[in-house]
Length: 111
Image 1 (cartoon, rainbow, N blue to C red):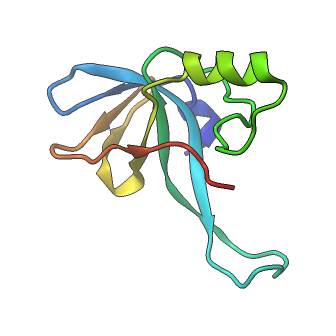
Image 2 (image 1 turned 120 degrees about the vertical axis):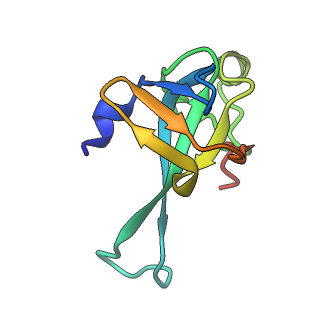
């Protein structure tokens, strides 16, 4: 799978109802801070109800400047959520289906 092929795909629940589009992916690095060439693992996808356009880094909670851009992008991506990789039932050519009982997490980054 090539992750860029997943970007912009429709995301549906197990009943086939559209929840949004894949707008980003989240990775975790399980290594000591500062360790070079550490392996990353895919944690999940970010689903945006309106658009697959980029957050441009404004999903970080402390980023507020320039103010108009930050406000616009946060408004545009309101309602976005993170779905863990294990909650994905199927990845198709243009659609990602979630398993029954999936959990939606806050998509904002704290750093």
